[in-house]
Length: 168
Ligand code: 5GP
Ligand code: MG
Image (cartoon, rainbow, N blue to C red; front, side, top):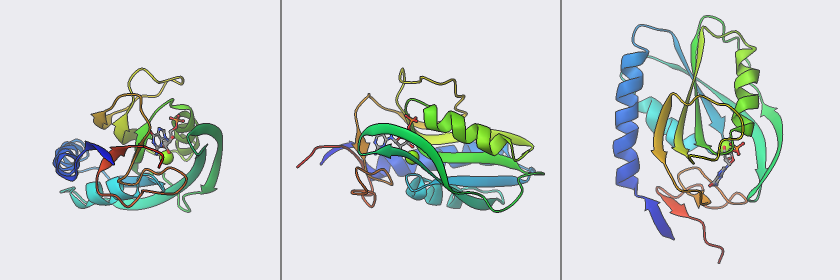
């Protein structure tokens, strides 16, 4: 695999993001929401690096089949109210933003005090839907990547680094 971001690079950036998020949400009731499955590794490392208390929840949406963009469906929703919480939605990557725009609308309808977005990766220039990204780990070129949660047809999610996808 052709490594794009090493485990060390990722872990250093995760600690920086956690520090910034901990400062921004200090004294506020924080609900960190993981977008399954892709964000599982990033989410788990990020929330454990926070220095402030937070509750956690999980949503699962379907967006991609292989490397093609597909329809948006909520497969697992949050079973609790978000009223009274500042919500930080944590996902793996912001690409076209089509999935995220729909998910943000879905979460916003649950009436959180605020709603912010954090992704590990962003592909600049690919946005087709207007989405504000408050916290971003890395900007990457417009290439298909796998590892650290990201898959290609459910493979490679367990890699501790991010690699350019190569069919073999
Ligand atoms: P969007 O709606 O922003 O185009 O799609 C975002 C979702 O597509 C991400 O949450 C992720 O599941 C998937 N995705 C987009 N780009 C990549 C990529 O380079 N690699 C992988 N594995 N998934 C991607
Ligand atoms: Mg995803």
